[in-house]
Image (cartoon, rainbow over all chains, first blue to last red; front, top):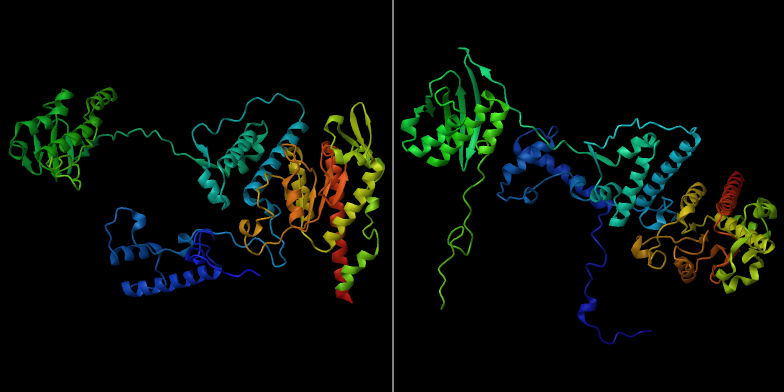
Length: 350
Length: 216
């Protein structure tokens, strides 16, 4: 027998990391679900609504009202959701009462991944057998390449979520190579449904900017409306055809609203660029920002409105002139330890 | 219950495994073909019948005896509801071995062997794991032509092993070695078929005996 002569307290302390990530028992999760349902009813009572018809959106609104938080990260704010969304899914015990595991590849360690490989390889063998049976024909390439626009393979993280198991990079690569091999075989179309489980649709990236068509008001005059922003100013402009070049801002004439020449020049620029100085009328509303910012916002709004009146080539010219781009420059924040955004405190040698 | 377990032990060949195969079957499946003389392992010399044009020929009489003992042993283990694990690290037969295991209702491992699967099982799998009661090696070497780690691990954990040993393998730590070819597809299909039939027979017999007991 061993007698304990001398040990440090470090040995007696529990090694917190040794047991792996926290495992939630089924009883614990059940209790959490009961508590959640009770809490939902309490919340409904507090808000004065019917406990029976209290949906998840109502819960979110109630929590946002009761616990307002200015934190930027949405996931750091208080949430109340069903426990199945909060606690990550865990593997239940893999063997029955007599000790025999349920899955036939249990003793490999990564049972879901290897069973997936096994199934995919079986599909590959079936396709090859079917191919061998067919009489030797030269199949014309009938199938259109469906991977042109739409789909991509699942990423490693998505596959891990699907299998509930950790994968290594090599494992993932091997699986993707198997799927690609299955796809390249001539008779791979038989297994399309199976392959589709592991592909994802990629939305088309190129979004062509839709130029709105002209609208006609009661008098028969063509007009078009659009919005523009600059710094903190938001503006909406409506440009009318068959006009004399009159511009009205917030109900006030432009000469009175913008006394400074520079702002009026900014407003004039899109019309000058398209040689349509005296041909259009404009009515706009603007709020926020300062003098120069409001002028820039109205300029952008009027340029966007003029797109409907003009050919595509001229739209391209406008875009290249920078008339249609939102100016991304905003006021930079002040940092701690400095006097302003960039200005540092005076440096004293001693 | 006691009678159920002790009755098969009284007969030498309770499950009648001898009728599952014959010498001609083994010969047709090319089980007698070994590797070249240079690959021969020292401990395989008693199992080798001779050498023709530098290729070793395995003695099929000895193979028959060993195969009969091994099949009898697997049948007894399956009768007593033990866990059987099939291991083979040959890529060509990985699918075949896994399908055989699935059809028998037993387990297979034909992938990369992680170090602590048997010896460190309580940490790798969970605390209440049950380890396999029999390990069957359908190819005793791994992809680098070295003896499979599971042979040594099974010996450490007191798990009996049955293994097909070719002329370049080490039959030392395997409890029921079967000298025979592990490279030809026909030979592997024959072994899979024999093990599958033996296990299914044993399980059926067990179910029948349990039903008879319940009726009485």
